[in-house]
Amino acid sequence: MVNDSPGRAAQRRALSRRRKARSGAALPGDGEVGGGLGCGYPVRPMQVHESSLKGADRPCAPQDCARCAGCQKLHRNGTYSRFRKVEGQWECPISRFRCPRCGHTWSVIPADMFPRRSMEVSRFQQLLDEFFSLAGRGPRPPPATEKEAGCIRRACKRVSERMAFLCGLLGQQMPLEASADVGCFWRALRELGSTEEILARLASDFKTSLLACYRSLKWQREIVPQ
Image (cartoon, rainbow, N blue to C red; front, side):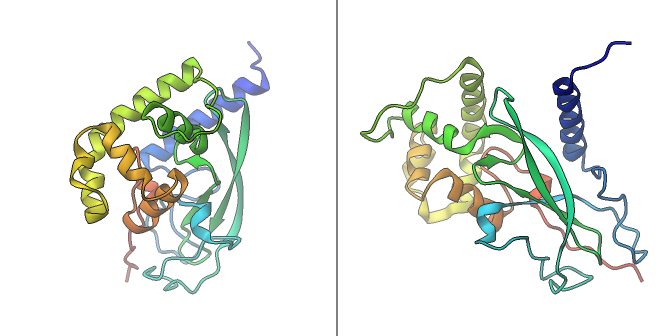
């Protein structure tokens, strides 16, 4: 038997968690059905951006929750780890909270992190600003590594596929020329704020993200079984 190093074992665990999250399966500790009240419907792990909490130490239950109408205080429910930086240099603990009434869990995406992606938001913004000639007059950011360059290429492809969708969501805040190409779109988007602010707004107002629509950002009201 080959003994894996702690780093390889952690990578395998993180990959397994990502696959379960994409499929909508419950993560360990989440439970497979909601709450302790015998409601019997599946629990989908949810995610919120730390910046959207506005200084609070935990998320709030949704006001349209069929169990608690948003009045239930969420309880801490441990942590799990995600890789931070594309090179996978270190793991970042993610706080998780659980509603004791309906059993739903919420994970808090730390500042400067994307949902489901390891590249830091600030580094992503630096590289795209530099690529699309938005960098300021200060020192240029360090050149992209091979892995970072690959991440940026894939991100630009995803953004090009989602430009029309995102322009439709943001409406008149985006000029008509924003959908001409990825560069025009990125420059118009950055006029609305930093990438961190844009991610938080897309998640809170439209239940989506910049690079993909994630099920974990979409709260769906559950019907309490009779």
